[in-house]
Length: 584
Picture 1 (cartoon, rainbow, N blue to C red):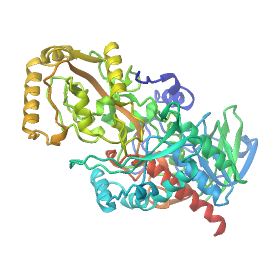
Picture 2 (picture 1 turned 90 degrees about the vertical axis):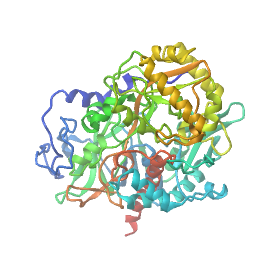
Picture 3 (picture 1 turned 180 degrees about the vertical axis):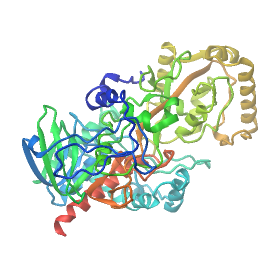
Picture 4 (picture 1 turned 60 degrees about the vertical axis):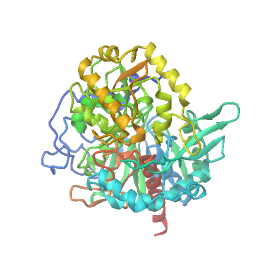
């Protein structure tokens, strides 16, 4: 089973290429543009005296395009405009349509990101109740606050916790059992206590076919087919692909009343949205210039973007909101995978211009060392913790190492969420390749020169470029911790310690992979965009990865589906709320 390879050409088209090109001519923006009146005839200039919370990029923000009604060949009237056919956009559009509103869902590309199949996080869902699963909501909420150092809006997290079960039940009612779709709950958690608690929140979507078993690969496309049929079954629903938002439209009071949009052939239109505009374009993980400007030191530990990440995530929704006066998150946050495999002689360079593969095995909590051969952290921590630990060392890469007994180790480690490699009851949300498939993947990477295989510890150290004596000392110490069944160095759980004694030995060089950005436009609990004074902007709603205020610093991945779950939940809540304005 080969690791998927990133297709960089896909990312260097359209708006992304434009964003990368404009980055070459910095104009020194330090804030967002002032609000544009509906009657403005010229683009609004940027100002340099905004609040310090606004990032200080080069020119990734640019200026709002100069568009007037005279540039439009068509005017569309709707109750609710949803921008972006990703997870949050689909939930919002369907929710608004089933409440009787006229809804227009637009997506700039030929296809949207759809609903994430790996996991939708929820609490108190029907699936959980059927499985006898209970989650201590207060414990989880405080865990999230701890991860964020209280620099997020915990009222938003509680909003997800209190409403996610209903959103997940609605999703299951729509797709579970339709077109071979099956929604599974991951409830099989390790029986041992963890330093970082794992929660059975993840509801994964798979395709179940008798002749091929479970197939997670096609579930997202099939799910979109089902949701499209459901959405378009309502008289007031309309879906337009290859139609992107160019700029929000505001009235003289600064309220958002619609948007200018254009199709792939250049046709421009004005869309009037009586009840409001919902922005859900997926964040900015695939806008190179914007990511580098905002994520700072993190980029130096990355080798790229997850190959199957949202290619639509160009930051266009965030920029449109900032042109309308919205405020960006104070703390920059990315969900980072610890799975970017490189060749041993390859250096971490520009994170969006490297040759790498996706190597799921790297997350397993084996011994991980720096470029010298010294252990660097508790390997049983959240995904991005090792990325940050390695960023403080040498070449910013890290090296998982393991021995011939790795299959027994993986079984004992019992990792959860998308790091799972074994098929087991109550843990099949991702259709894992199982250990034989994992072995085939390791062998393929040995053949490709990326995974190193050696007969001795010394040979492994030499092939990976370590200081041989330092690495031997590290291995000896780690073996002694395993023998004692106590990690007195970094405190890893005893059941996740392992030996390095049985040849052959293996090692690999790893860098971080950005999956999605988790900072965005600051919002309140009504999903309204906030301006620099923390006041809501009338008519502008932001959900999904375009929205901020929910995470800070890191992603609590041990509650599987946390982000996709909040995207789904807030999408549904926001859609229903805007549709209800028709009855106000």
